[in-house]
Image (cartoon, rainbow, N blue to C red; front, top):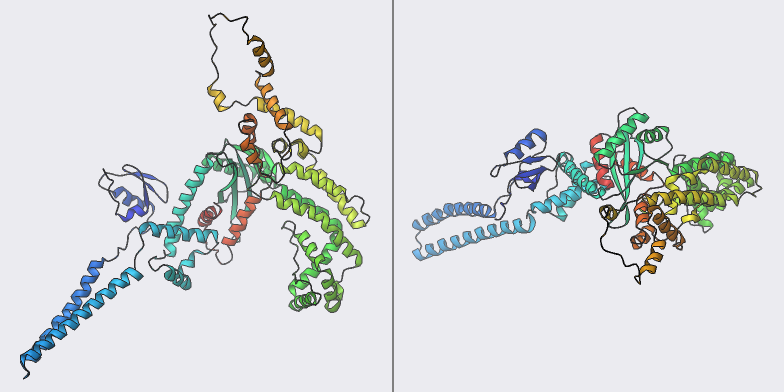
Length: 634
């Protein structure tokens, strides 16, 4: 039997899930209803969502429109015909003439009526044709996505020029009001995205979390949480934002730990957490420790602190460069003069970059740009501000500091991604950075010599024990691009390899768990002592280990002996091709290579939040900002 069509406007706000049941698009509550009445849906909307308008302005029928137009014309005809007949009766002209005039008048009237009716029909079909309900809903959803992902204000639907643009693009689409957009469409789109992301994260075998805190321009505190996992179907590293929530409690270790635990339970991933990546804030690290999760320090934050602490050895030169940059950025005549001299020297005009202490690699960007237009800067300063001139020794310091800082610039950019494996590079980059810094040990320029020495000390302090971190060293070994080659000390690899073999031997695969044989009863069938296969079976039995730990050792040794793949290849695709060969290693790999090396994903969330909640949008509530961020990041 065909299902009954749903004509009520209430179905714009509900979704039919089961027979006689419907789910609210705003609060996701499932309601029961009778076979012939949807009164429960109406009562729910009035009680729980009273601000949402459930009335639908129905369009006029074409027949009614034409009938009204025709009746109006006929009324005019009725008024015109008696006038003609009266004139005919009092006229001395022949009757035939009167009859002709009457016929002509009726024809003109009918023609005018037909033109009016056809014009109305054309206007309705070509210009005022309404969109279907599904199409209108799709346009509403796309409008909300544009606002969330483009950091637009909700009031854009009230701007006159935007409304004119939409009218020109599709006259049949009626823009929702700002209130409808805020109180109806936004919660609906948020709940829809929430259900979609929850369905996706269910497939994850292991989840890595990044978290950080942020304070908005309205002095509201937020905590962002992102989740990262390997999709076992597509073999891609996936990232989702599971919350950018307003947090009004005291930022103590206990409170933050409880907040994180509640979020993990809400998403049903509390038993899948393998690591929590955060910056070096003491309260976040303490919260992770209280929660019983493993912690990984953000690699990018650590590098930034390392560089900032070491730059104090060349602070005198850096300060002089900052003063010059500030002058040209602040003085319009100075900026114009610098541009003119660059053009005279046939140099592509470049603007100077300002150093910002909270922005990673900004000192390198400033010095690198400064040195690129060295000649133009020297000439311009000599003309307009000779007191800002740098000494020859300062220029030597700038020139020699750039290649040293470029090491950390390259590493920071490469580990900050979230769509490719990065945790396995943590130990490798520490090894490479140490080797590169060692090359500058023979430097004779005093400030640079002190700079290099300080960098070595900071590296040893922050990354001296990085190869002893269980998560990072196992991730390095399980990455077919690095394996043992990623370690600086081979002893640390041997220790990690022995532990990994033991862990792999304890893995019980799902197929093995269901096929564990029960104790067999003694067989009554006599064995063939002199079978031709007896010797062969004994040899095979000696080669195939029965101990699971021994089997894990064999699998691990075979994996280590395979050649390394190119470092630009995707290790997840390599594991996809060898999934059946290294079954235990593959299962364990899913719990390590999904870990991110930095908490940059949270920094990106806050950057988007800052673009959405700016000085012109301070009235945006914390709840709406959280919903907009969820839609924008997912």
